[in-house]
Each structure stands twice: as C-alpha cells, then as structure tokens.
Length: 148
Figure 1 (tube, rainbow, N blue to C red):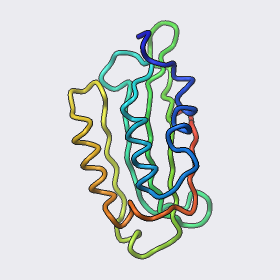
Figure 2 (cartoon, rainbow, N blue to C red):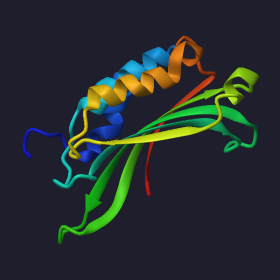
Figure 3 (tube, rainbow, N blue to C red):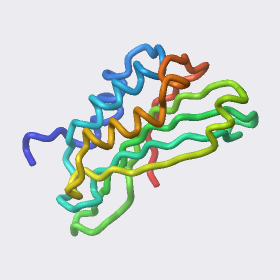
C-alpha cells in the first residue's frame, strides 16, 4: 500500500490535526479528519479501527469524565501473523460534573474494511457527544500511543 503512510507516523499525524486544543468540538473534528486517513496496515477487516468511548474513571487517582477517541491498528510480524495492536489516543478529560456523570459510559467501534459507512458512524458519535460536550472545553487533553 504505497499511498498509505507507515504506522510510525500516526501519533505525529494526530498531533498535527488536534493542534493546541480547544473545545471538544475542535478535538472531535480533528479526530474525524485523522480517522478518515488510512495508514499502512494488514488488509483484514479488523486491522484499522476507530473507538469512541466515554465515562467517569479515576485512572489518575481522581474521578474525571473522559472522552477517549482512539484509532487502533493491527501490527503483524515478519510472517504476517498478528503481533499486537497499536493504539493512538486523543483523551479529553473533564472535572467532576453531575451532568457528565449522568451520561454513564458508552463505547462504539468502527472498522474501515468491514463494509460499514464511516460518515454515518461519525454522525452517530457526534450525536452522542451532543451540545453538552461539544461546546465544553476539557481541563486536560492527552495525545499518546500505546501497544496493547
């Protein structure tokens, strides 16, 4: 797939899209641009997926409402076998708020090569964010990658 950039460039590409931050809407629009890009992956239905999830978690020791926008890639070894997944995250964290806690938790996956409609998925996830989150500014934004 010569027209697709290598996976090593994903975090830099996400950082370039998200920029200096802003509202949830800004991060969401950046993630949709990033999520439309295709990178060099194995040509299987689950090799390039987008994950949208939110909920109140205490990962850093204090409860925060977190919106996690993730792209996951299947990484194969030299024999073409699954080795691990690489995930690139845009995490938006908000201080405790009853209206956010009331949203509970939610997650949804989209896979590029699974014959689903990306624009429909993006629209449905934007609806999940709704005005309650889209116009809110997170108190923390973290862009990172990890191996899972």
